[in-house]
Length: 474
Image (tube, rainbow, N blue to C red; front, side, top):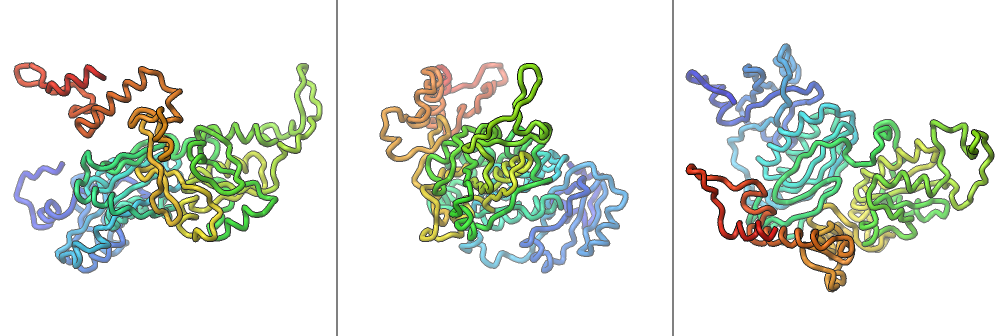
């Protein structure tokens, strides 16, 4: 925090009133406004400032001047976004485009060892702009899904890509239903906002989460790096021809609860419960090679260390060509990299994933069957990315149909036909208590969010009778 001990000069007063305090730490970060802000800045006569180690440095439009001002300044903190003052009123403050919501899923594999430095400024910016969703930062890159007005989302994406390593994010944009727009604009970041599931990109519309993890998508094999090698990208318009070739083996890289509600025609379903099970399925399904034991390929080791030639199983033979797909493309990047390390020669994957295919390919030409599960409040989408018909079981985070909700095993917030037999009576009762808390307060854990209730000055605990009753039931 900047403390002022004397009368501030005009530039400093302007800094306090119009710009946030900015810190610069990352040599790979290029400080620049978003495209929208940049156009407005050209019309503004106010200077921009950077606050570094108690020094206020004017930011000139000239890059060389900016770099000279930065000389000698230690970079001890990660920078926050530059937000320029704007004297000109928004020409269309209530315009349709400025108020309409968008959902953007994005990712980028990159060498990002200092990823933790981005967490706080990124989260602060999202909260300031009322952008919701979930973002994962890891040494291998970034993965996220966010929702907000178009201008706000573009500013967040602009800040992320101001780091040179995260430029050219792979993005898929989806529309938001009028009902959800009404919730967003009517309640904002409140408990009335709809909830959602989350796995690799946890998504919830009433707040933003920025998490630090070891991987942006969990395969459990650090040696597999899409930065070093990756399969061939296939444009959605060329996908049909590739998977219609009888010599192409089409593999769905997603999990079983996703493939259950939709997949491409003739695609192989590995029936995995999690992405980290994919390597084991490949090794069981095909006769793959191991780079560390290439000399033993096709041989079996006997009990005394002797080797003998194995008979090849034609059903387990490595296919000539593999085409893979997933929701947005991120899992395929790792899966294709893994297959290439195992000796597969021709490995292709759908660029932009199913979402890009459903967005660009007309339904009349599509080879997609069913709906596509998504890791956010929409649960599923169809062609043109319109919201689907499936709902979510909050007991197991799996999609359920209207027919599933007619089952006696369905209980809202507790269980569904896919998890009823897997849950103990104790687990179901805890889920019921959690659901009662949410219905009473609009938040899990009650007004204290599971923490100890606050105490008054005389030491007596402040707790309502409702809170006591629900805590006892839990």
